[in-house]
Amino acid sequence: MVLLNSEEVSCNDHHQVDVVAAAGLQCSGDMLGDKQLVNQVILEGLEIEEPPADEMEAAEKKAGISRLMAGYVQHLQHRSAYHLGYPLNFDYDFSPLAPFLNFSLNNAGDPFAKVNNSVHSRQFEVAVLNWFANFWDVQRDQFWGYITSGGTEGNLYGLLVGRELFPDGILYASNDSHYSVFKAAKMYRVKCIRIATTVSGEMNYADLKSKLQQNTNSPAIINANIGTTFKGAVDDIDQIISTLEKCGFQNRYYIHCDSALSGMMTPFMKQAPKVSFKKPIGSISVSGHKFLGCPMPCGVVITRLEHAEVLSTDIEYIASRDSTITGSRNGHAPIFLWYTLSKKGYKGLLKEVQICLGNARYLEVLLKQVGISASCNTLSNIVVFERPNDERIVCRWQLACEGNLAHIVVMPNVTFEKLTVFVEELAEKRKYWYQDKGFDIPCLAVDIGKENCYCNLHAKKLRIPKM
Image (cartoon, rainbow, N blue to C red; front, side):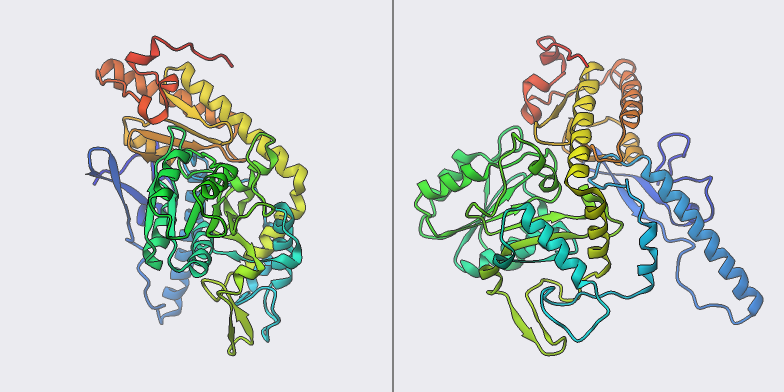
């Protein structure tokens, strides 16, 4: 196993206290296929032991635990500064909310129902849900929803409602859909048909039409991506609805919108397809810890009130109804989301969307200027580019990779300066890979289009963009 030095491209920071050496994340020398390194969590020094009976030994252990915790905070601070590949917004200060962590808040069951337990945050949860109802154009007396543990639970709930409404329905999801969609199909034992995508990652509507026409006897449950996981492509709801109705599925379909990241961004883009309950969609889910930013994973799912009734059950133990997936739910998340939405408002969110989109365009141009194949969808803050030939770069900057591609998600905390440092470092490393080592620059025309490919074949035909 190879442990990378912090002076190079570390996944660990050896200069920090105890915990990094004891419980850091190491990059194994073993390979998956020919590229992806296996990550293993090292538990040395973290095995849980009984407190010593001797007072002096107990004091020493307590001091050691304090050093370990302080060291891990330093480790997280350092690694957060090199976090580019995943949609997490670290640009927040929730220190005023710290007192709430002294309470065990459980919003079990239906957030709109009265319960016996008074230690909860239901009032904050309903306020957040009302904000999202307005955001997605549905009247307060016509929707139901709850704050979830994240995007996956939102997808599980939305697709479960679709399955309950149409027990013999077929799930249609594009190849670029989040893996949780296919997990849901397996859990619910629903037949799932994959739909091809264009080079941008958007659903191929001709292929959707073809697949629907082959299964006209079964209702359709559609997963629409409002921002695919890897390329940030947005499926066109209007195109999907038109295709369904032209294929004879009137009143025999359910559309769930997976809006995990981009669902907080597209409403602020004039050119984006509008996601709204004014259209015949069934549910929308969004993540709370992604664009908004939250220290714990969370999300929001909204459906039509009449749809929620298919899952509603009266539970005597909690003296309430429950239509949720998990039952017990994090009561702190609603307070954090309410606090963020109250502080930022529409104007604050619009400003952050504009900054992220601008920085994403900057990154795409900067990569192309140094000869790196790259692409960024118009409605996205995700930039896909040629996968680095050295997994230490991937590990250092925590890049997400698929095949020959890597991507960076330009979040509110990802600054212009940080992107510049990354590209300069990557460009310097590439000189070594492709000039000194003589590696071939990969062709990514199939992955991102020949107009974005800077391999030896296509680069000659391209004009280097200007800033």
